[in-house]
Image (cartoon, helix red, strand yellow):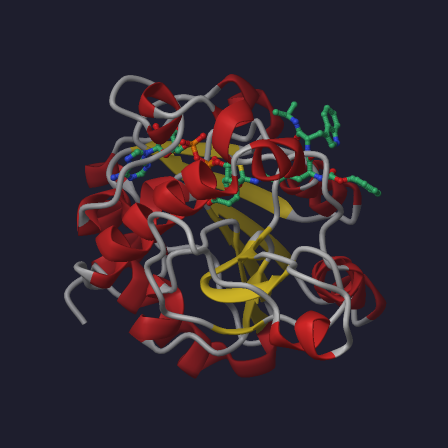
Length: 259
Ligand code: BJW
């Protein structure tokens, strides 16, 4: 285990490839709550009541209230030094860099990240709960009926179909293209015989498939790093663990302290 003050920059040599996986912890210092633990989102709203397809079918207004509060909270905060350092690393490394986030808050994009996979969707998009139209930008804050509904379903005579946040709930599949970008980036490094690094930041490693990426990367020869405020249960899966706040640790790991 490494303490933040002892962190040395990752060996990002000219050919090295870096995949960074972020979780709710990276946005905590911007002012957004994480999911698990004391004060986490699931403490106030049980996950099975707000983040499953069954919950939405049962009580769409309750689910929308939860996500409208999340939208309002995310809209009120700004990216922090860890988000900005990752955007800068992307500018320096180009195609050798990929950022994969489980977060739906939009803060990585706000910091300037473009080589970005939003694995669990986005707070700032909606989709129809019935038809297969692609997700589209949506910045409304519904709290009570009438909830927003799909104009295409209405136009096609299919009646009222509620819109829902375009996020991935438990029991729902992740976008196949997003998953392919992750596995493709990791396996391409092996083909090119380039050093591969995997860095997870601010995630408890409890939700799959994201939690399995560290082992997949290790099987492909990656050196793996975790930067987290506290030691999570899956710390054993990493070669190196740094316990500390993301805003302190991430810029140092990327050699961008004080940039
Ligand atoms: C700091 C810090 C600071 C604090 N600095 N650190 C294999 C095994 C077992 C189960 C499964 C499996 N494969 C699939 C499953 C089922 C399920 C799952 O994983 N269950 C587990 C709970 C066991 N997975 C799914 O259902 C997924 N779908 C799927 O696999 O589909 C397959 C399928 C195929 C075909 C048909 C149908 C299905 C979907 C998972 C979706 C997860 N969705 C959520 C909600 C998204 C929308 C929203 O935001 O509301 O995603 S749940 C929630 O957890 C959210 C997060 O992205 C995700 C991960 O949480 P995260 O980011 O790790 O946050 P925390 O709070 O847990 O941790 C924060 C950490 O930060 C802590 O450790 C702190 O210490 C730290 N920290 N401050 C650094 N300043």
